[in-house]
Length: 545
Image (cartoon, rainbow, N blue to C red):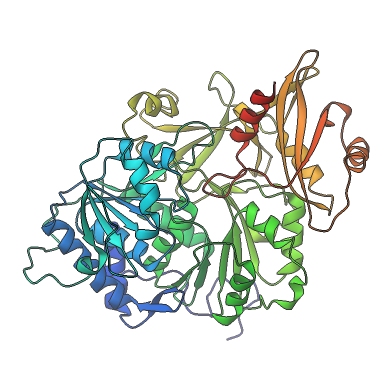
């Protein structure tokens, strides 16, 4: 039988993953995949490679040792490591023990680290010895009764350490006296699998409560539209403290793929080389990575032919960058996505539409509904700008230790009997239902009687090939109320001047959009998740006034 080209009959290996049992808890998916393909490569990090059987067995040992060391059901375990094998094992070991894991970005400084530890109240902290100074400084700021489990290349514990300590090596060994079974923790799918802390770009970091059931539901939804199979090999450079990075591992362990973990973007050349070396099929990235990529010389020397898809989320990717990615990797599908920590993922654009609607982030993911509301929380017609509201199985319960903020953001007064998330993000929706991000409500600039989206100005400026990164904010102005200010990073080797940028703006923007102030800078401040931190830019402006 000859099938028509557009047939829905699958001639390749069946997409998605076939479940022999329905996972109810996060670690169930690892256990089922380990039984199904025990020798399949699960994790690659540096020179270390682990099969599914090894990940399952080692995380079993960690669970048993955590319980013997005093971990109780619902206790938190903070993981202060970079992307590593130990991070993944800590996640699944904590889950199996009935605990809640909290992944901390390895670049955190003491003040923010102290705030998160104080807020989360972990019973255990798993940390690398290279982070001993920062961790000690953070713990000295708060009162926390916890045990530190050191990941130590030398096998030694830091000196003069007043808190209870242990070594990672003891956690991964099979305990001589086992007191553990999978049924013992008594975890149910409504219990918290993890706390994911926001970057704090709009205030202090907030712990987003993430139950097992929600995490699995979101993962299943994303897997369905990415059409993942066990043949997929994901190269993940995103920090696992960032939901976008964390879900790369969670999803792969559900469908039986392989994850290559990279610790940082310092050696981007090595990462690009690894795509071809490992025949990676997926490369998730954020706009910061795209900006770094396009500053590199001779990109055509890298082999990207193995990539089946690339994806972007976390922040709006300028349209010009989307076009450049499509030109650089023409045979890979590009998934433009939008999400936020409070619901992991909200929308995606079908790759077949990327070239037609490059400024759209698509439609709602499966099992999710979105709609736009005015300031009184009433629905608005297509074409108008409103706040995005979300409902569905992807919504988290709320914010850890903050019931007031939870009630303000996760509303029960908009739809009868429903919880609705008010995202704080402004969008417009076209007649086809496609979403277009306009900006954060608190980022909009009111100047000369006009309300301007900084994103629109950033997209126009990004069309200049000599501009590497750009951020636009509103600053106080005696006459206009607010004025537009742009911070611009020039590409390496460029001689672009402020006058040339201003001429480009005058030719390509409405008069009220043209930045009143243009400042060329060496770099832009970033959140731990790699987003441009406009909060820092605004604080800098206040200091200069």
